[in-house]
Image (cartoon, rainbow, N blue to C red; front, side, top):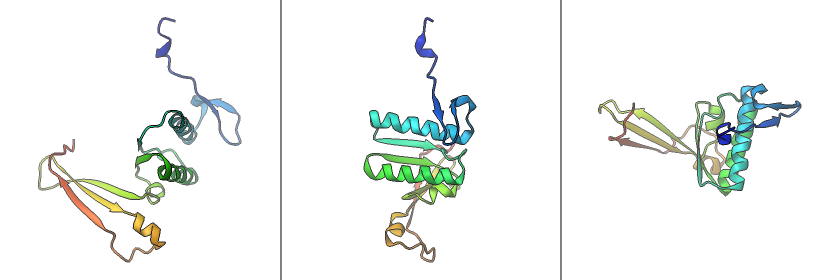
Length: 146
C-alpha cells in the first residue's frame, strides 16, 4: 500500500445490550452516539474551544436526545462552548439560548437574527410561558442567504 493514510480509520463499538459490531452494522442512532463518543474522547485528549454540531439529533430517539442534551449541557458548563443546530424541540428546549435566522423581506440578499436567552427562565425555575421572553431582532444586511 503506497498511501496508508488514505484508508481512513476502522471504528467499532459495542452498543448497550448488543455484541461487538463495526460501524457499518449499526443503526443511525447508534452510529450517531458512537461518533459523538469518539468526538468527545478526542476532545478530552486534545481540547478544542468550541464545537458546532449540525443536527446531531436527526437519527436519535427521544431518550438518547435527552442523554446527549444532558451531556452537552454538563460539558458546556465546564470546558467547552457548543453550538447545536437542531430542528427537534427535545434538544433545543434544553438550550441556554436560541438563535433564529430568517430572510429579511425588505432587502434582497440579507437575513435577520432573533436571539432568545433562556437562562433567566431556568434559574428562576419558572416554566410558565405567560411572560414574553426577551428577544433581540438584529438585521444583518450583508449576510448572503443563498
